Image (tube, rainbow, N blue to C red; front, side, top):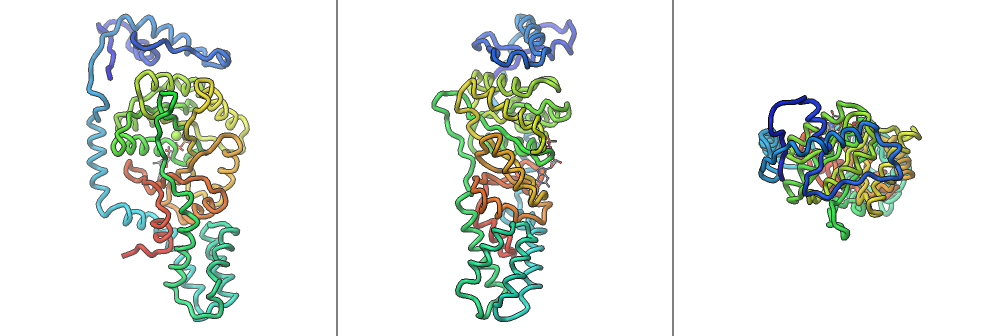
Length: 394
Ligand SMILES: Nc1nc2c(ncn2[C@@H]2O[C@H](COP(=O)(O)OP(=O)(O)OP(=O)(O)O)[C@@H](O)[C@H]2O)c(=O)[nH]1
Ligand SMILES: [Mg+2]
């Protein structure tokens, strides 16, 4: 990797920085703009490209080691090591405490009779519905549980063990880590990240970048296709700095699809393994915003019909049942290939993940239980089911 800087310090710094964003290196094949949506590209883009072309002759190359984490990244890694204390399982258990507390308290209240009768089953179903598993999934679980147990003596421990087993069986088919494959056509594996406002998309991209770089040794680039507000770009810049992943940005207000398009060209030219594309938060019932997301996909497909290779929907566990309609709406606009469920640490609605798995069958790649880099892990069905039922507490 190389960086470029101006040979002398004269000139307008702001103009220079702006131009540098759009330069191509002399050795790179020229980046061609898509013709069919030219008219919709931010008019500032062409000007910036022209400025970039003019500025490129005035740059000198500064070699820097490939993907060297900067000081911030080092600090973040140290923080990460510290936060790993106690291991993921105990942090998951702590994170799920609110959800677990709601379920286990409900069970204690319900299991007042020693023998299993219809009233207990009905109340058990209510506990599961209140824990956000959804009515269909709750009914299925209770029906399974009643088989062979009706009229017999039951203990709270037995109920928890049996439910954990059934829940783990529901979750197991969807617990699939995000599989990064080398595309046959070359270029990076492209991951588009979408979801409603504030669910944790940008944070998830930061966590993913860190995981892919550190654990899988991938060269990762990020694209700030949330051009809706300047703060969103700055937020991703912080994650780029922390993780040492290069970032493609444009001014706020630019065409999000153009950012995605150009980022793909750059990631391909720079030999990246993975491109993570951040997008603006959009409410699922806002047709124009959903159309913008669909346009990002359409524009990417012009470069390669297999793009994006993965489309991740980020869901915030605190939104409970609304997650169902979010998944339905996004699925109807784009090909959602997997879910990342965040904020399970602040939610009493962790049961929603069980309902989603049971009713949609969309893979759940990872879960988030905090705001830090290390607070996300691949989703493990049994671990989750047992933690949710309070069976992993020491
Ligand atoms: N507790 C907790 N907070 C989280 C988690 N993931 C993200 N957050 C926080 O949620 C807030 C929103 O996160 P962002 O990553 O900015 O969400 P976003 O979806 O990119 O938001 P928009 O771009 O505005 O739509 C931030 O304060 C994050 O630190 C999580 O797993 N647990
Ligand atoms: Mg964001």
